[in-house]
Amino acid sequence: MAALLDTALTRLLGITHPVLLAPMGSAAGGRLAAAVTRAGGLGLVGSGYADAAAIRRERAEAGNTRVGVGLVTWALPDGPDALDEALAGRPAVVMLSFGDPVPWLPQVKAAGCLAMCQVQSVGQAVAAVQAGADIVIAQGRDAGGHGGTLRGTMSLVPAVVDAVGSVPVVAAGGIADGRGLAAALSLGAAGVLMGTRFAVSAESLWTGAMKQRVVGAGGDETRQTRVFDVVRGLGWPAEFPGRALRNGFADRWHGREAELAAARPQEEPAYMGTQPDDFATRVIWAGEGIDMIADIPTAAEIMDRLVAEAAATLRRGAALLR
Ligand SMILES: Cc1cc2nc3c(=O)[nH]c(=O)nc-3n(C[C@H](O)[C@H](O)[C@H](O)COP(=O)(O)O)c2cc1C
Image (cartoon, rainbow, N blue to C red):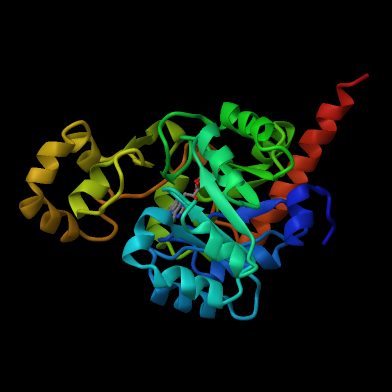
């Protein structure tokens, strides 16, 4: 496997390509994480909402392949054994997202594990690095799934790069092909973390119908909304809505979250009672980059294309310098 793109991230993690799989609760099981690692990047398994059993299950699925583990920080107080479980497996890295990582970083560092924090602002990036984060993921609001509302990837990444000195910064949000990887490197990032593109892969836990629905959709159809969390009574802080495909359910309730919360006794069973492929109702988390997703390849095929296209894009850019 040729290492075309050598960065501070590939050196720190000992990987060939500067590409990380986002720890997506619903999509990034052990099989997909292992496939991304075998393809030269690093796969991270999701953990649901700080669920130790989910971590054990997906790590077993990954077999002997080296993977990392992602944890949803605001959920850790309700499931603190999830961090113990993650560290017991000696993961390549632990990633903390959505909430204050500072109380949890000492335990990760004391275990001798690399710590990666996903942040949505420059201030959060600086705080994470001061508390010991080894890698910062700068996540723009373009991202699929939950995220902040303030900053887009394009301006957040270079601002975080400037703010955190020599700590490697990884770009996340709306990156789905090699042009996005090349752009992230040009902004000073040491790599990318990709979710939606890998969710639409052969090895992802998503159903075939979900993958096909995203293949048929475009970024204009996505929106950040809280309605899918409100109807299910999930405890997501209001500052983290989730970017998903728009559908009839979201259009009906978006902007009326308090009313939806009050109507939960009727609305939650109705929502949960729909068929899993009733996409007029059910959520599909997806980032703005889905315009670039047109098929359902293996993770290895995605990686090959990404790296080849990024290298070609950077060479084309260099050729402009005459
Ligand atoms: C289906 C889906 C589920 C996600 N679940 C999680 C999660 O459980 N934990 C987490 O830290 N991030 C999660 N994310 C967000 C990712 O970490 C990442 O920021 C995002 O996927 C990057 O944007 P992209 O989807 O445009 O590549 C999820 C994203 C998607 C698309």
